Length: 208
Image (cartoon, rainbow, N blue to C red; front, top):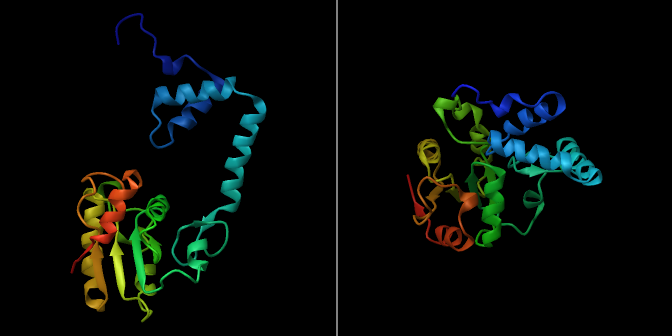
């Protein structure tokens, strides 16, 4: 930094800097974005920001994880696990709850889900034991289940997780399928358009 330049990160003090720091901890929010959001909050109507604060408190108080599939839910069972109209013989394995919402938008899948809670990433210290894989194996002891669709993200971590799951599940005598190609490599399911994701389900292929 040249002489006389001021690091804007050190300009603010107290509450505003604390807010910028906390916002900067959120995924996808860099220092400049954190500053913009902080000043938007500062300048916004107090009632609007009170509703935002209340929404954050409420989601932390009420939202939990489904006891069966680990999707987000305000009850012990999520609405999908409670829905008796869903096909119980097929489980779609995804990384995060946001992937469930992406798939639901396609209207191409009427089975049930299992949310792993992430993907295998040794660099980040995330291994199979940190994911809901043991719980998936417990669910697959049910003779009703005939197919497991592996719908992890088409990136390095997602592929590593899929490979691990295929190895773990191949001896169970259950059909294991993977979403068809067409999804952008290196991307996330949540960003795929509905048509592409729907076709990926229709064209899924057997693995293992």
